[in-house]
Length: 175
Image (cartoon, rainbow, N blue to C red):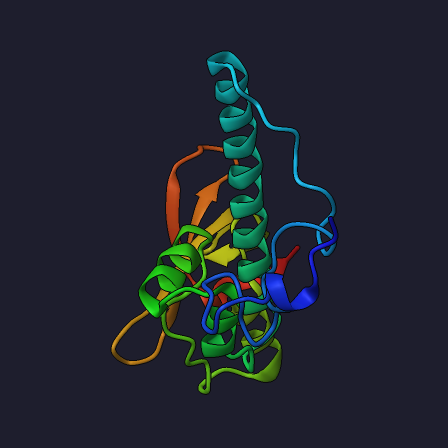
């Protein structure tokens, strides 16, 4: 029996539908035939475990996409990222914090090159420079700004594996 499109229409405001994604539908013919029905307990446990693993991988993929969208530039609209991800701002900011993205992105006091660097950093970027007459090389962890607007970077030093804090003005290169 074929299911007509009218019968599988999504109720308004379905949580899986956003302005950036097509309306959520389920079942045949839109998404293909339904999976075979499992009836015994062990098979159902296997289906649950496999589904959980797929969902976990999709969540990780979505987090990376969110972080990359935020790092795409200072004009990246976090409100639109939250809408596309169908999540409230508090959850979006927790994800951005986990990926080392700054909560506040105010870099107006720096030149264009430094502003681009600050807005594009994500965890793991290698940052090199010189601070207090000592060279440093480390992996980016996070950043913050003082009340006066000075941006500081938290890095994991590549030689000692300790965390170090350096001002953004001490950075000579990053990749």
